[in-house]
Length: 494
Ligand SMILES: Nc1nc2c(ncn2[C@@H]2O[C@H](COP(=O)(O)OP(=O)(O)OP(=O)(O)O)[C@@H](O)[C@H]2O)c(=O)[nH]1
Ligand SMILES: [K+]
Ligand SMILES: [Mg+2]
Image (cartoon, rainbow, N blue to C red; front, side, top):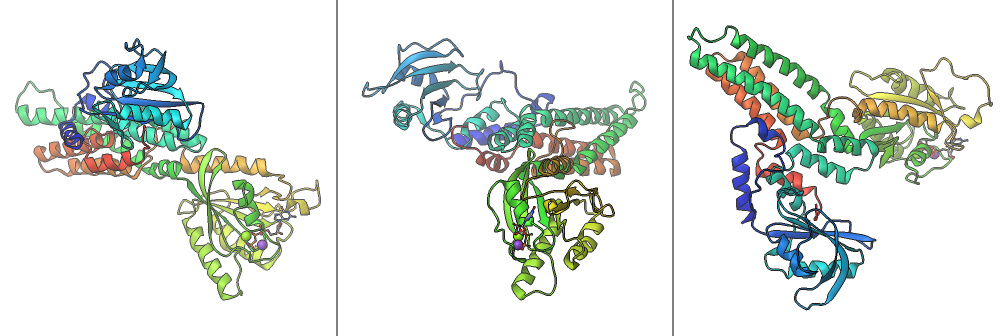
């Protein structure tokens, strides 16, 4: 039933894009009824002070009345203390704050109720069971509240993605980015672009219809072409930035590399604040690539520890070296580690010649990789002397043993990661998903067809295709599969 209805909504949304279809509906908009009423625990699982249980759908008012005494509905959006009891047995369940959100002014756009109960597992399961016994109510599926909010125009698709990312955000930068997306920034940007296309399309269509007419302003077609060209430039700039947004969502690849015993594993453990890798005085300790997700100065990163790079070793270590080199190729940022007290050794010189100098310390190489050179074990150098290595490329001194130099390293990492991931506090909204990139590229390709079109009807069609891509980005023309993928990321109760 719900699925069928959903298809209808999705199909309706696939129609021609109106300027409003990219944005949220105003809260006064009528909310289409969706049949069943769902309920779920919306706060986290486990023992806690307060747990929030909510319902959404036409039977919310009935559910609220059935469980509470006195039975009258509280004033809209105002918290009221009520006695909760099981509607079948009359058994008291809790004294709780309840809230009533008549639709469409609610999160989902439907009638919603919230029960803020004491967080013990017995109270929560008692209230959930009581709600399940109210006719017309059923447990929600994962993401169903948000899905209903989207269906009722409360959130655009990019805002839904922002909400999913906010729930999963683990670092400060991810939270900032997700909040910006939830605020609808990417949607607004696409909306603006779609408006430009609508205008250009109107001009082209006017020319098709009234081209011969003297009343038509001169140059309408030129103006449309000019606007399309400006749009192409804007889309191109955004697409060039696309990898940054995705890195911010899933973490930049930071690979720690260097000769044996430089202290690579010690640095991994220091940065991840846990004993991920084995540290020992024996060179060749690390063989496999060890990955660990970390929050580096507020940015998400996937940190890889690798085998020390050297030649003339046994087959197992050789395989480790091969894997390390392969991982180096995939790095967004290489953290090159050398033993500051051992710079003249063969393996240090080799590493400098083959990795550090070709990648160019602190500047991106042709494949966009960045590199930070760290001289570890600074505690072994004579103290307070001048920098003993003025001829090396720019570098940082660090001691994993004493922690000296760690703050400077984190500061440098923050700068590098802000370049790699984009800074979510400033700049244009980022494209955080491959889906965004796909539709922007589709839009750009269609604009290319516009320029090459041999007649005006084809040119107009290219503009329609371009606009369709922008509409699908924000959910105006979402297919059910895309929606399924996005909503799968949600938990029950969201
Ligand atoms: N004095 C001093 N010793 C350090 C420092 N960092 C690491 N070490 C020591 O150096 C040795 C090698 O450290 P690891 O972290 O295992 O070095 P690695 O680069 O991972 O070594 P492989 O995996 O064998 O390539 C260990 O005995 C560490 O305790 C440091 O800052 N100062
Ligand atoms: K070692
Ligand atoms: Mg190691």
